[in-house]
Amino acid sequence: MSCFSVLLINQNFSCNVLAKNNKTISSLDLVIYSDFESRLYHSLFHAIIRIIKLQDRIKRFSLDGEDHPKELYGIISALECQKNSLQEVIIAKCAYNKEFEVLAKNNKTISSLDLVIYSDFESRLYHSLFHAIIRIIKLQDRIKRFSLDGEDHPKELYGIISALECQKNSLQEVIIAKCAYNKEFERLRFNPNNSEDIHKELFFLEALKSFCPNITYLYISNIWLSTQLLEIIGNLQKLQSLSLWCFISDIQEEELKIQGMQFAEILPLTLQYLDLGDTWQPYIDIFLIHCNAPLKKLLIYHLNDEKYTRALIEFCIRNKALNYVGVCRYYSDLDENFKKEVEAHFTNVALVPRARIVEFL
Image (cartoon, rainbow, N blue to C red; front, side):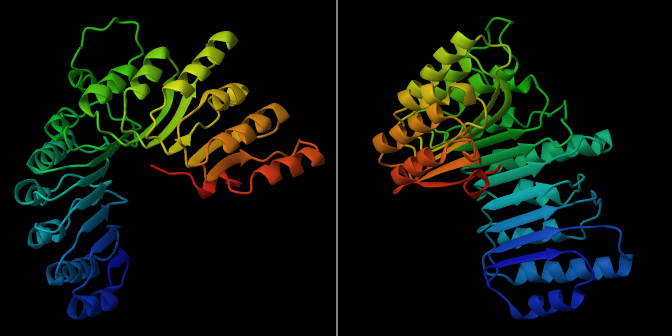
C-alpha cells in the first residue's frame, strides 16, 4: 500500500489494523472533524500516530482541519520520525498548534508546501502559525512548489511571502489564491520605485519575474489585462503551464486586438499548456493566427463562430505538437457541413470538454 486516506470518523478498528500490519504507506491524507466523543477521537489519533511511526518512508502528508481543531494529539510531532523522507506537506484550515514547531525544527526535505489559511483565529495563534510556517520555509534545502490559499482573503501575511526569498533559486511553481493585496508583494521586487498608477496586482507579478525566473507553472485570475502583465509573462522563459483569466471590460476594441496579437507573440517557446478562459474570446482568431508556442494542450471558451473555428483549424495544422483542445461550449451554432469540416481536421487533435484537461490549483 502506497497511499492511505482517512476521514476521521469512528474508524478505530481499521486504523488499528493498519497500525499493526502495514509499513509501506508513502502518502497519508487526513481530514479531521473535532466534534466527536473525546474518548473515540483521542483513540483514533493514537492509532494514526502508530501508523506514522511504523512506516518506512512517508513522502506526502496532508492534514485538513475542516472545522479548525485546536488539539492534534501528537500527530504532527509523530512526523519527526519521517524527517528524512517527507517531501510534500499540505496543511489546511488548522489553528496554530505547538506541534507545528516539530516541522519547523527538524525537517529539511520538504520540496512542496501547500497552505489553506483562515484569518478568523485568535490573533496570537494566527501570528504564531505564520511564524512556524516561515521557519519551515527557511529550514528547507529546496522548495520547488509553494501554494497559499487565503480562503477568506487575509490582509496580513506576517512575512510569509518575503521568507520565500531564500528559496528563489529552487522555486518552480508558485500559487497565490484569494489573498488581498499585501505590501510583502512589493518587498519582493528588485525595483520598487514604479509609478503609483500601476495596478496593485502587478507588484506581485513584477516580483514573480525577478524573484522566480525559473517558474514553470503559473495560474493568474481576477487581474486587469495590461501591457506590463504581458511583458512579465513573456520574460518567464521556462514557463510550461499558464492559466490566465483577465478583466478586459475597460479596454478599447482596437487596443484589445493589439494586445491579443502581442500576447500570442511573446509566449515562451517552452509553453505546453495554456488556459485562456474567456479573456480573448472576441479575438481568439487573432491570437491563434499569431501564436507560435508549441502547445500540447489549449483551453478556450467556445467555438460558436466559423471565424474562430477556422483559425483553430489553421493553428492545429501549423502546430504539430497539439494533442488536446478543451472547450467550455461546443459549436452548436455552426452549420452541419462546417461541423464535418472541423471534425475532419481534428484527426490528430482531440476536441474535448474543458473539464477533462483543465489543470486545477
